Amino acid sequence: MRACKRGLVALAVLVLLGIGVGCGSTNSPSEPDVNEVLVGFFGVDPGATFLHTCEDSGADDAEPIILADQDLTPGTSIRIEVLGQFNGGGGNSDGLWAVFSSSATLLGGSELNRVSDAIDAGEDYESPPTFNCGSEPTNISEDFECTPEVSVTIPAGATHLFLSAADTYFGDNTDFDGDFGVNIWKQE
Image (tube, rainbow, N blue to C red; front, side, top):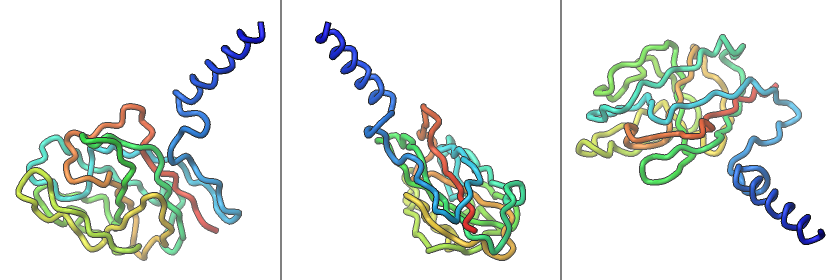
């Protein structure tokens, strides 16, 4: 009887670890600071971006978060925490880039500065060149890296926040379990 119980316990532990419960899970939500309030979780489509994509026909356009809908205004300090992973065609990644904008305008993938009303915030990050079309530049001076998390003050004039998986080719990106995204914490 004891051997049977031990076997059932061992099986239960393996099942729980297999579904990501316990110490086997990666980049799980952090504990909030005493001065933070969770605004919400925002899923990120890893096949969508605000960066230049040139001939990446499978890339989609990033849909921005409307800051006012989340009660977020310029001058508010937030923490963006990356959760989950996506498969970028060559393995899993949790990299994420962001840019604030004063509009929802996103130009076509052939444009370098697709977020025409981008506003500089955070520490600048130099995104790498495109993968599939002659290593064309993708870097814009207003974007910043979020991985694994970043604290930033929403800049004056910002009304939208664009998010993008950190990659150089988006058409083959997938998120089969739908866990890739961010928690946004409002710092008070």
